[in-house]
Image (cartoon, rainbow, N blue to C red; front, side):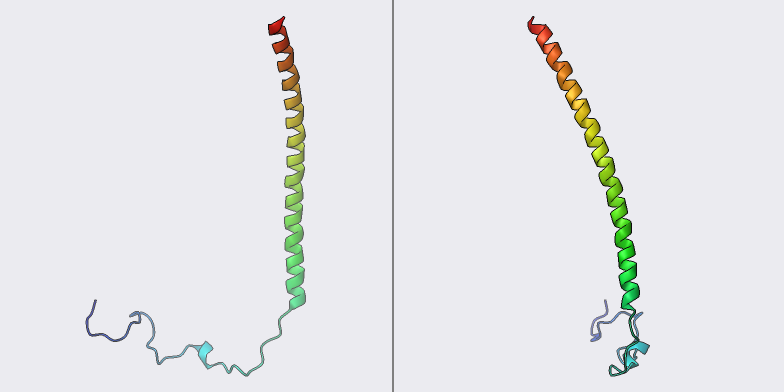
Length: 88
């Protein structure tokens, strides 16, 4: 570190008196119009895609849950038969 240096900016950064092009834009100048309709269309398309993915996951979950319920019911019945045979 250099001692006695009063500036705290990086050596690669421009000196504080130089301005970027963004700094010279007049804040009073009108902005370009924003296409809100295109943003809404893009948003709705992305949400529809997410909804389709979610529906597919929910369908898979429902199918697996149904499979698990059949498996659990079958195992439960089988275990009851086996435990009953042990007591006889």
